[in-house]
Image (tube, rainbow, N blue to C red; front, side, top):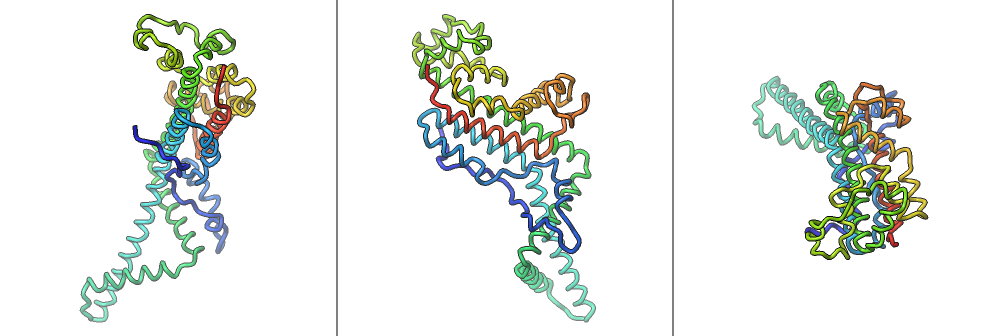
Length: 342
């Protein structure tokens, strides 16, 4: 197995404009325009997004540490994929801007040379023009550079978003990002529980007999085949027998099982009981099981007033960012609650 990095990860994300880049200048306020253009694209995770979780992980050893590192990597990968439309537009804007400036300058220089009746080798014109453009960029103030880049990116995004296919794909990518975030949470919780029960088999007895956890584990009877697969030694495999083949796959089940294993962990129960995490779980259900079509059940279970029954689930940048934040909080609270013991 390839070892996961020890350092706190820095997800690949584009450099975003500063407030100075967007503030009014020469009668132009870019903030509202930026918000309108980018609301259906995900474009940032703060560079220190995982720092607190990283400090929690320093206290963990062995399999739990590896499980949390895999969780962080999954979230980083989801963020990288989610930013792809924005990064593509930003790269395209930068390339287009430079190419246009180059071609305009070259054509102007060649026209001037022909007008004066001079014979100027084209390669000399090209080299001289490149030097002029470099000098122009080098002499820009930071404010001029920032606003030029923001305008270029917004122009590229506006062009791309005029295509309905691009708009549809951008929003669908946001929806699928929510699915990836929930999957990372679900895998993290199940892997931690499996590890805890494997280490302390007595936890399985507690979960199988104590409400409200036991209702989610009913019917998980031990068979001779399962015994044979474990070499007839269950001392370190009870977690796998309970959850590996039939993991907890709903927020309700996760809440109930954790309430039995960690009754005094308020921070963990608060995040598992949060409205934002509940909304993420309900949205994941609509996306996966209803082809992103909002139904009456979703509306009755959430306070999501932006949605309309029968329409596709509308997801914007802020929704995705809130889901990433919820996932991080689950990871931090779960790491702080360990270890689980009988």
